Amino acid sequence: RQYGGYEYSQQSGFVPPDMMQQQQPYTGQIYQPTQTYTPTSAQSFYGSNFEDEPPLLEELGINFDHIWQKTLTVLHPLKVADGSIMNETDLAGPMVFCLAFGATLLLAGKIQFGYVYGISAIGCLGMFCLLNLMSMTGVSFGCVASVLGYCLLPMILLSTFAIVFSLQGMMGIILTAGIIGWCSFSASKIFISALAMEGQQLLVAYPCALLYGVFALISVF
Amino acid sequence: QMWQVGKRQASRAFSLYANIDILRPYFDVEPVQVRARLLESMIPVKMINFPQKIAGELYGPLMLVFTLVAILLHGMKTSDTIIREGTLMGTAIGTCFGYWLGVSSFIYFLAYLCNAQITMVQMLSLLGYGLFGHCITLFVTYNIHFHSLFYVFWLGVGGLSTLRMVAVLVSRTVGHTQRLILCGTLAALHMLFLLYLHFAYHKVVEGILDTLEGPNMPPFQRVARDIPVVSNAVLNTTAKAVALTL
Image (cartoon, rainbow over all chains, first blue to last red; front, side, top):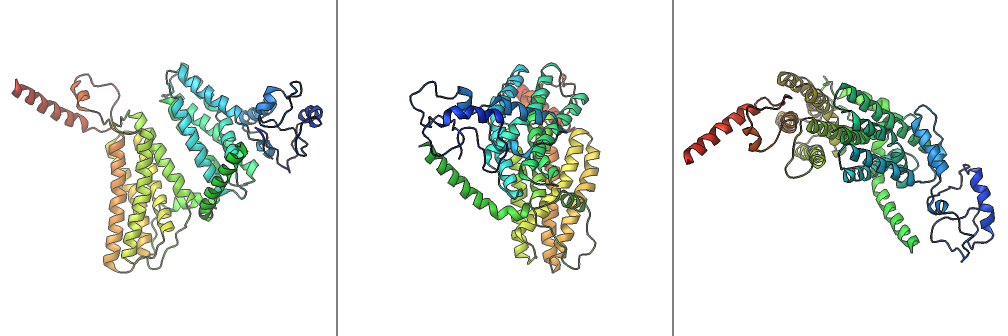
């Protein structure tokens, strides 16, 4: 059921039309149990045909269109999120965002990749436990990591701003508070649309705000 | 082979999930309820003649403990506190969670000795919501540095949340001695914790070397005003010791 980065659940109707067209040439030639979708992980049994291998990005599970869509969802906090976009767990985008965050911190003179990694790992674990306890259906750890990683994007804007201006004045405090609110609002919006938890957006947003607050603390100080 | 690794991980995750499931009913809350309970935690109840209802939920207290951790971190960062052995994050988390879990367990044990009608989850919940007062006080006084303001908040806000916890416990205990023991301990620990948090985490905990640069005090005002007194005393004794040895 799960291969690589693509986890299409059985009920999901969200199959991008362009992907469907690319599958047609492959299904006849690759030995797989009945799949309508070509697996893209490295362990699937491709024959020795070089031309029949899917392109590298597809094999790695990196779909730029999805990444871009999810990024846009994060960047427009007032846009209604589609609950099914989180069905495939995509960790490539969040990984890029974490590295970009670390890079912008580096440009400001703070070599704190370790802190970013540690805090994001512990934060994802904490949110995973909390969301599993609070929602009717459970969540997978990959989904939580993916959402939290995508919503780190506004924090990158904050740390970019911190390169040139110091964030310790009143202006910095207001900007930091705004960015934390933006990040946690988008994250909670995606979580509640993916988990169908109506009315609990504030309850989900608050722990996200605490987590992004710690990231902001690294950026500011 | 990766499939087997994945399967093993999934079963491990599943067993972890199964353990977490027992906590599930304690997290089933609405935002309105949480807000109501937060405000209620500052209002001491008047009726202590029959047992007061305590909501046994863990979401609010857990979030409050994490908020306290965040406020502590913020306070430590703004005052450039340097922790010699350990990290800032570890110290903050250890302090807050240690207080919440440790004091809850201790008071629960005392409540067991004093025959009070309270369960562990209720105690955790009560103490957790009592930290709301601490959060407010520290948030205000870490940013506005006046000792007198802190004392006003300590007595006012801290006192209110302590009174509420004490009133609830009194309503659930019979016998004057038992009430005195239980509530006295809780009140003392709660108020002293706030005092400790204010003074231990928002001043510079550095070595003696820094006090030697007396005339060149850095421009920003440090919070604990008694540090210069201490440092002057240290400076004097050091100078005397040096003079004696020469």
